[in-house]
Image (cartoon, rainbow over all chains, first blue to last red; front, side, top):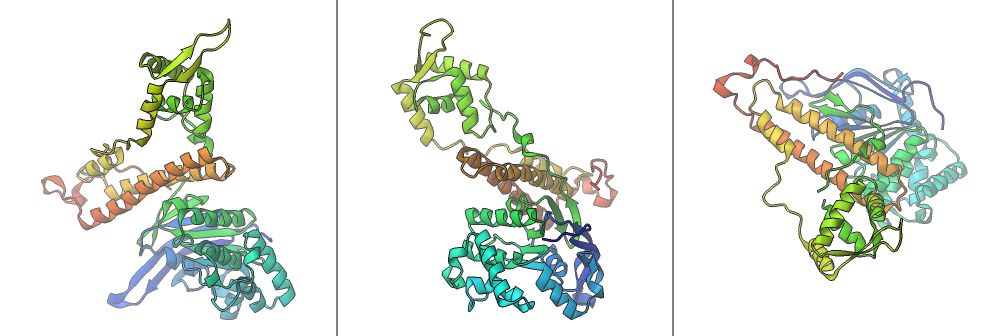
Length: 245
Length: 193
């Protein structure tokens, strides 16, 4: 996986306004955020705080009203819509709560589709797909359709699709929301593993247990960044005697 | 957590030395709840006095005393396992008390206070999650202890979310009719960078 020296993702004073006049809604207000390669950042906030809007703008699925978004140091505002679409296919992987898998394609086809759409040859795409499915423990599910998989397997497949090829940015919206705690933990371990290999990850969630897998947590409220966690101390700081009777 | 019952649990598996009990308890709780050896011997003396365990005299000089559980100790332990932890009346939770008190204190922004506690909880949860990540998945004892802490902290963060929403809907009136703007923010700490 290639890495650049600057942040994989940078938001500079990004604002987003929906509607106008009395119906105007300010979903994001001057948000600054930088995510480095190999880093996992969680965005926490209640419903309506702007966290999903932030993710859509970070992945260029929506445009900021004000401010600048840079992916791999390249401003999205300077790109044509075709270039943005290409950047999305090549560099950005998305994981959603409801998986968003294509039901008419097998697991292997779901994973290789983004590569083939990007012009990668069928054989090369298939090899990359098999390697990614193996990495996520789904090699024996390659020929299955999404509705033949369990919820946990479907989300692992969604992660496989999001990291296949040379993706540098992984964006996840409540990726464990539909899963039980064991499968949810498996999903977060896989996202952490992808980040350890150099992918920059952003997870939005209202769940503190999910957010605790991140290197940093950013708190959003009413479209603003209101707080951030400090760099976490090592786990050895927990090993102090507790109260015993 | 009761040291008394933790020692009975270990002795129900077979006789042990005092030092062995201390080491096994610490290891089995993922080293999150270490016991000092003095606590172990004091508790063993009381258990023996109450007839719940018995000991062999040391066979020779330098040998340690061996402790074993008695039938009465076995019954006490079995009963303890099935007794629900005390949940009534509700424990006086320090965080609940702080939020209850803060909402009526002039100069305290209760939402800022809630966020400060939320951040602290999430930072602590990050450390526990890092501990879990660094531990082999087959270390069942540590996994159980860490999950218990993570779920407990998660529940507290969810209570903070609910409290914040409730306080936004029903803000506390300031005493003596003072408006929020007229109250000096003497108790508001510096905002983190």
